[in-house]
Image (cartoon, rainbow, N blue to C red):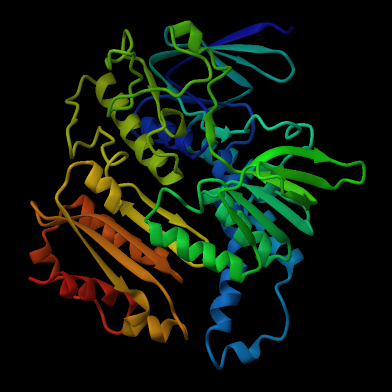
Length: 482
């Protein structure tokens, strides 16, 4: 092993994905020094194996579907989707799995980068072991932040590992489109990848044990399931994999618990995520390696008593704290964490509480999310069932998106649905869900209404432009009544 070098910074961040980058950026903007440690590519999961490449895979097919729904435009379409061109565009958005651009940004922002496996080695101390075996000891004057993200969870299915199953990473970076694809799971990743590969020409079979998008409003799963089947996807609701085996010719056979065999060229597992905390030295601070990290609203890691660990120097932001496994929520946490670390380092006032700049309070109340299936799904806040379970006295209002004038102009045969969940005691919206073509761009208005707790009486004065799909806001209010 090579020698050990030592460096000191105000803040050390383990993980250089979008969350870690944003923590470090806020820290440096606040006048402190920061270093990030990364064992893979700077830019993290979202840049190379999740948000960017997967949406690139989905976008071309979505654009083609949109054109085919418009008379006058669809007549100009003379061919099918070019899978090779789609994959090439995906490669570009993943920067061809090279991180020079992200590294250049770190350098321009004044953030030091250390490549290797980062492990907490003591209080405010991180040890970095590089690929060549060299070791760098980093000391943080104020804080260490864990932003190591999450990885795909693999179920204990006989033969699955030996079969070389895909996770979201392999699906997002696939060099070719498999002729047949089996998908184990029915959540967001499973639904999006089934949509993408069916459009690219794969014969897709989904084993959706708990249904398609089961945690969303019931009408969401129903509509996406119907759309997947219309696209040629075989959706087996209630089915799960019992065994997997790859034959010598490369064919994968998946046996469901009901005994029905499925033959495929590749099998994708998308049933959930696990935290990347197994080998980062958590045992040095009395925490369980491989577990999720509990945090308070300022992102300080807490013990079983809910209090910050001794000294309050350890923070966790992004997927690892399990609050909301979404890039935009992780970046939101990163801003709060970076700013509060600076405030505490400067002995400044810490603004906690509901609207404090140093607290991440939206993660458990007002999380927006989009699923880029066909049709798109967008939601923020609580489902009707979740609101009821929370003890709220609610009224649920649904409206047919296809009946809005702007929708008919947007696409012939437009079909969709909008739902708002109203807290009847406060007369504010606590949940909003949309399903339909291109509804993603409608979501932020709902997010503002819910986070801002805008009273329904005031929303009547937020007049949607005509003729746009946003007119659904007026229709929902009319259906609710004054």
